[in-house]
Image (tube, rainbow, N blue to C red; front, side, top):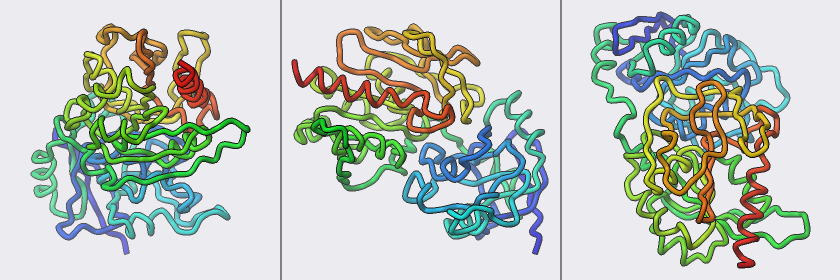
Length: 366
């Protein structure tokens, strides 16, 4: 049965479609509307905690063709508000699939809208910027009111909604004959694939985002990892204080939100990009080697260049020349804005985990 639906943006733009996935009790789903340009990996995107508070528009027109599998979940459940697509696949075509994407969204309580002119929607967001919106089967007037009332992600501590509540230990899978390190990972919205990469060099203990520096150091880590996560870095309660208590005492590696929080701790500034970086095809130049890495990205905020005392820029985005990497001059700490655990290049950026491994080894040797 077709359920007509409408997306209304906070600036009044309207996009028609049909409802898919879960059916909210009041027929309304609201959030900040962004777009993602990946051709595949829709399940990883939907289950990435960094999308908390956001409605994901997929620019690729055909989504759901290979179904979903628990093996590709990046978190315990999706934290995004909703999903918008041009066409939802009618059947899955992969031996790995255990369910259809539409059925998975319904099971997880995530509403969606299909049949939308996503090219027009993407062009509008690109020109006007990411903005609040509301979609569903409710009356257009009710959706318009919901879109205007939606606060978006600015100034909201979304990390508190996605972080785990208890520590969790992941055994190492290191098999190169070297002794594994011990890493404590602060969970600001940690992806499962990052944990798997850290396991190749260390035993990993993932702790809640609110864990104090003293509690982290009491675990005697060889290194600390600052994870990805959603939203505004300035709104993450207690993160700067925690990282400040770790710098100079233990090697630190940050990714995405972790990169922004490291920069903020060092005195750097962050700002919101017009429509963010969301996709699997962003070219990034490594300034040390000159090599160009094809990277996966998902962030709305960015570190301002020349704003981080005591750190050098190591990577830049070749699309808009924004900061993509930092390395401290006098401290054992570095970070990148993009996601080296992902595979769009397919493995252009995985060397960063090896660099973290060597940084911990050198620091341990004194």
